[in-house]
Each structure stands twice: as C-alpha cells, then as structure tokens.
Length: 282
Image (tube, rainbow, N blue to C red):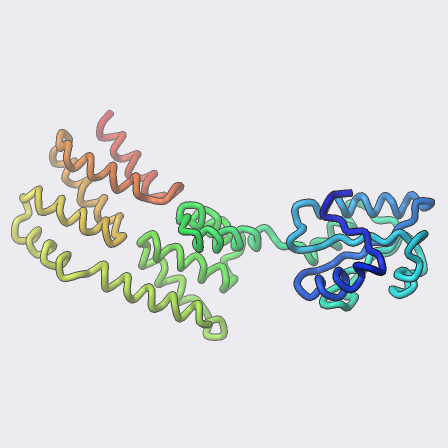
C-alpha cells in the first residue's frame, strides 16, 4: 500500500469520510486478511490510484478490527469498495475484479488526459510559463476541441503569444452559455492586445515603409516594433524578405534569430523560420 492510503478508524472517520469527501472523492475499500481476493483488490486499487491522490483518497477498512465501520456501510461480502462524494456513497464494486473491470470503474472518476493537460496549462499560465502552457493546452485542444474550458484557456495562451486572429476565432466559437467572467476578461484582453498591436508608432512606420520601400533601416525598426507587440509572424516575414534581398545582411539575420528565440518552445512559427533561415544559409 502507498503512503497516500489511509487506514480508516473511528478516530479519523469523520475527517476522511465526511470532511475530506467534500473536497475530493474518497474510495473506501473493505478487506480481511483471511480473504485473498479482498487483499488483491486493495493492492490493485492502491497501485492504480498512485499519482492520482489529488483526485481520490483511498481509505481502507480492515473488517476484522473495524466491524462497526463495515456495518455502517452495510457491507455484506468481500471484496467491496465504495466511492464516497460529499459524505454520501455514489458508486461501488463488489466481488473479484479483473484489471479491465477496475479500469472501467475508475475511469468514471479519474481525470481524462485532457483534464490533466488543462490543469497543467492553467497552472503554467498562472506562473508565467508560457511555453509550457502552450504545449499543454495545444495537446488538450487536440484531444477535445469541443470543450469550452479548454477553448478559453487555449485562447488565453494564444493572446499571450500574439496569435490574436487565432484567439479571436477561438472566442467566437464559445457558446453564450459558456461566456462567463473568464470569457469576458479574455475578450477585454484581446481588445487591448489588438489596440497595442496597431499603435500610432507602428502605423507611422508602416506608412514610411510604403513611402520608402528600399529603406532597410525602417523595415528593421518596424520588425522590432511588430515583435514587441507580439506580431512575431509579421516581424519574421519582414526580416526574411530583407534576407532574401541580401543574404549577407547580418543585422537582419541577428534580429530574426532574436525573434525566433523569443517564441515559446514548440511554436510552429519558430520551426518554420528556422528551416527557412537554414535553407538560405546552406
């Protein structure tokens, strides 16, 4: 049995079964040493729930010494396990279980892979780890592209990496019933990002580029401004066009590498322009 397994007694019954089950699920497993099937089930549950302690607490009851608890649950045979939520039994299993049967039972209560990825992505966002957040939420979105909570979180990280059109499309797909306070905050964040991305300084530089299409310095300055407001794709396109015109342009090459280095780990844009730069050089 793991350290996360709790041996249930009259002294901790209220804390574990009544109080802890208000915050997360508690699986109460009943066993007796003289019944090998019940020992096997107990150990299988301990093994399968390892790593999921934040979602389910495994509480074991030795029926030889804790008969009162077994009677309180109305246990009539072993092996038996009862899932408790908010102090009330919600499901259970009885009799010997195969691996598949146990997996099917636990699957109803354990988080899906996309749930774990979403939780990891949101935590990374909160800690400012944008690359990790982007990776986790991209995977979560790939597993389930219909869930509003995943869509909103993916829109959030999209805004933070400057993919504003993608974020806008994601938010437009959110149904009205899911347009909560988080959604509203994302809409505000998107609007601010769009305004910042089209500042008067950028508009002035874009005008100068049109007026002086051969002025490399102005184009570099515009690329820097694009990058600073998370318009990295436009920055890279502009710098790449300069290198296409002059592959020996060391300043534009350095700026391009700086922009690529600033992208989140795993960003497809970084991969695309690294390849283009490599092909140009070799």
